[in-house]
Image 1 (cartoon, rainbow, N blue to C red):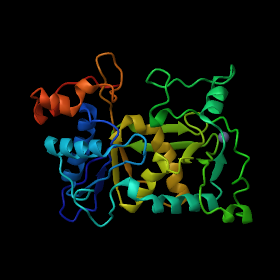
Image 2 (cartoon, rainbow, N blue to C red):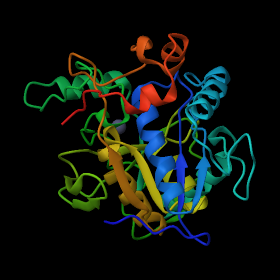
Image 3 (tube, rainbow, N blue to C red):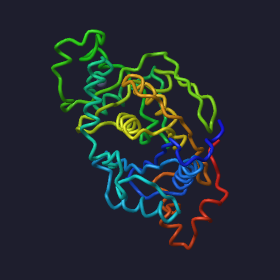
Image 4 (cartoon, rainbow, N blue to C red):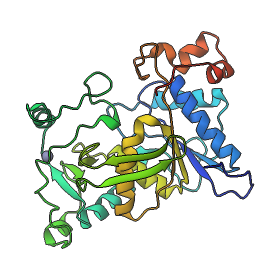
Length: 311
Ligand SMILES: [Zn+2]
């Protein structure tokens, strides 16, 4: 698709959504730069949203570092935690009431069930001899969002079943309590979309991804839920992010449909890999923007360097 011609009255709204769980690396720089360029070329608005939902892993020092590193790169945004704006707050940790309202709507619509499985239960189910074992790209660990293992369906029959008739059981529940809550994915349903960078995508529910977390037992909304609620509330028209989130896009399209939200356009950037072909992660401290800057590299060096890209 062609990019939107420049216009001062553009309705384009893009976003930068860093997670403050480590320092940004060159891969983030590429993706965020692309998001910045799209907003600028469209004459639109760029929103900075800090995805600091995870209380165990998020650090305010990383949030400050992300803002500083992006500014150093030359990226500018019009709304954000440092600037305010019409859709404040721009910190996900301050937006819990919105996520809770969406959780309630999903529950009323019969999309959710409470999941009592422990992490150990899931690992046992997934390592059973006849189950397909999902190996995370990082070498067998499910540490990235798209590598959430396919849920074996153990608790699907619990609260939230018979969704067409929201009976007293469901409407009595006002809060997620101390449970994990999952979105019931329609098995076999095909999710298709045309990515503005990678072209047509096709994902099959129950094969490429399973019943996914919407709310965590530690009282925090899942990444998937927070992301769709915020993209809708902040009127984001195009999501530019890394290709590691392609499966999350399928999940988020299901959430958008269930919540009555329009999908934004999707643009997934190919990922920068290291010399062994592995995706960059927080372990690649040497490729963090901080480290490169300390070694004397300029933003131009970083943005124009020829780097290996995942096919
Ligand atoms: Zn379960």
